[in-house]
Image (cartoon, rainbow, N blue to C red; front, side):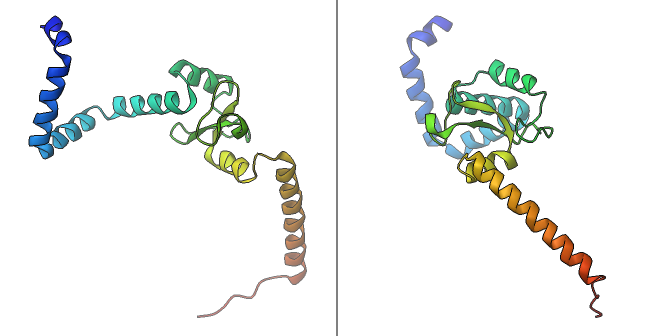
Length: 155
């Protein structure tokens, strides 16, 4: 049977296409039930597929990066949560949506990855923003200390 299926792959694929076209709702319901029964496996397969198609990473590559960073964001060193991790990379190499082993910088939390991206991966700009934010926070703290207690509105 295995041999026959291998030899008649095109014929079987056409029969399956026709069967799905005749009753698409039944097919969709079967797929929903299959995904519901195997939710964890489907999630892992999707994750592996995305890591491979966008970053050329095999599961071992991801695990090696995770272990090397001790499960922490390589920028802020906060603990990463598995579902919200980005592969940070240099956009000048592979563009905005892909990376290769050469331009990968590390695993980053969404907050750090977005911040670096919005700053155009410019560390000087990020430093300037940090310096100005520190100065602004000091100024606000000084003004708050001068004014004393904030009056509360009565309703």
